[in-house]
Length: 394
Length: 126
Image (cartoon, rainbow over the protein chains, first blue to last red):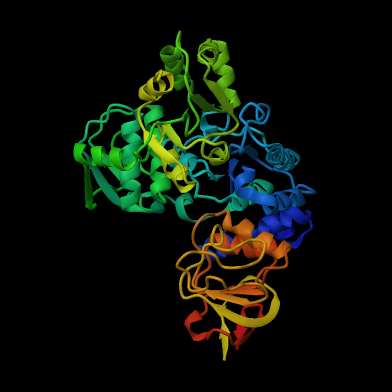
């Protein structure tokens, strides 16, 4: 692998301990995946923030790097295991909160923006077409590659952070045009009416294609929320890092001929819906996985206006989108119903299983997948039904 | 026998081989405090990786696994070296941040469980 003079200096330790460690990681990954050289990145999204996943070891690693490491490019952060200011009202235990705040402090020292969202593309980290980036957070990786046309591999926490501390990533995988062509076609015959239908389709296709690049055909239109839900689902049941949508995504013209094809009909849609539903009456309702967009806050405000929620209801979103919701008057209507904003966090990375809830209703296929792994039962339903479920009296 | 591979993290170490013919998930699969393998279905369940030359085809599972290797090292429960058929991101990053000598591109099937193995840079001798 060819390294520039400056990259050689980074790996030699001339620019400090953290830079050296970061460069060692990138060189090793470059060797493993046959990269010829490094490429500069314009932005980084770091995953590995919740103390629930990091533990003391992760905290120690980050604190160690923060002694002399600094972000060299725009770097934003994934959600934490709790709301950074409102954790008490979420029922989070003090010991957990203290550790989580130390993790955040380490990231702050590293020069990372404490954005705490899984949708950086809605909150100020908005790459443009063709830019090389290094993002963790699998749902954002899929969105950035597919909908924006920026280029990133699926990074883990340490490799994304290494890219931030050096401003580089090894040039391989989805950074190279020829690796971005579709590997399998999906003929969509089901009628997709709402983001949850796209999520169910993503969940079905992710399982079938594993780490392939699906090319969806036969859908005339899709909203930002449709693509956001689809991206998250594809990356949770499978290892998908990119998709194409005929006529809708920017690189859908890349050689999509002669592909094997799957079919997604109303039968697969109904079956996937039912595989995402367990028995039981929800005692916890949560929307915003991935984090809510402003449009979703508008919908929630309309649905919740003048009503009261009867059970715990979390609306997960970034601080940035919440502030826009404040300006637009949505947040007030949502909060007046008794629903809670879960800022900086979400139902997947917060220790929900320890808060005493047993059955979660959500409009996210991704959340269903991970909450089940954590031992909870799930009910998958559209946003409107989530609100109905939360406000139903019984 | 002496095998030549590729050094992922260069170093010297010597220990008894602990061999898994299946990929290993460190996150959820290895107790980060004791080094005990707890992954259901693994042929190594109940065995400890502590101080061993851990031989397996490649890592799998969550990328948080890299931090588990780091935690093992901090707790003195890490393997003294890692030998893989083909290293991937989780193990490579884990070995580098934990400074555990790691070699790959080696025919791991040749290494019998329990034999004494010496790792030095890119070579594996047993």
